[in-house]
Length: 182
Image 1 (cartoon, one colour):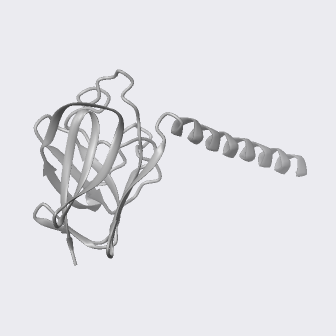
Image 2: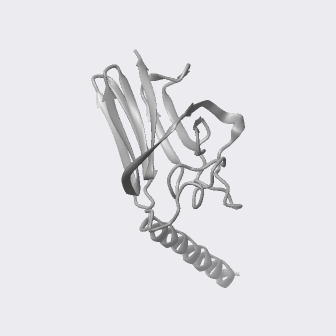
């Protein structure tokens, strides 16, 4: 009986070490990063995986049009705000959200989901977005640019009383305007 317990313990340890190794290996291709906006009492951040273009067709290829994308790589992209934000015509309550997008040729849906999955996709390879817990969905128009962004990047820019969250990859920019509600 002791042998079985020892063998089972070794098997569990080997599996755990393998999973950690696999997770670190996948992150080497899409390192994790954090975009942050802080001013006065406002703190907004996004933690996300940053995949590379690597001569691939991104939108309409690697990232299909009109299908939910985890908006980055590996773990889910996590959006956090310590203040309520007006986005479009709605208000996103302060809190932590999984950020998903639905890229389209003419418009993108930006999805803030109150359920944060353990990984960005499920076992079928689909984005782990739970439609029942979508807190806010807003549509914005993508912008085509001559500039090439080799690595997926999220940044924040301040425009007067507005904070713009900017998603950049390949030759596409997506700007999500947000107005803090103090």
